[in-house]
Length: 71
Image (cartoon, rainbow, N blue to C red):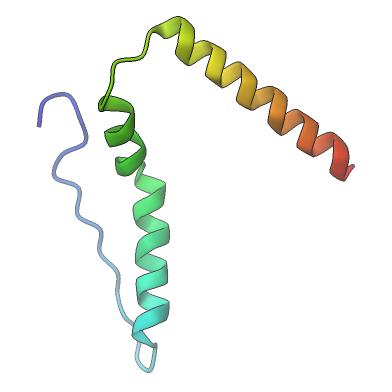
């Protein structure tokens, strides 16, 4: 894989008496943090930098509005 995330292995140690569902949930959380899926989706189609910047600004405005409502 060129220039991307390669060779990453997620290791989850299953504790004694821990259910498989809990271990799977921890795995999913760790996998989400790596951002592999997010990067894969972003690479599926080229997006101009101006469009990406616009999306980031829109998201920031949305998050700021959400924070204003909770405060």
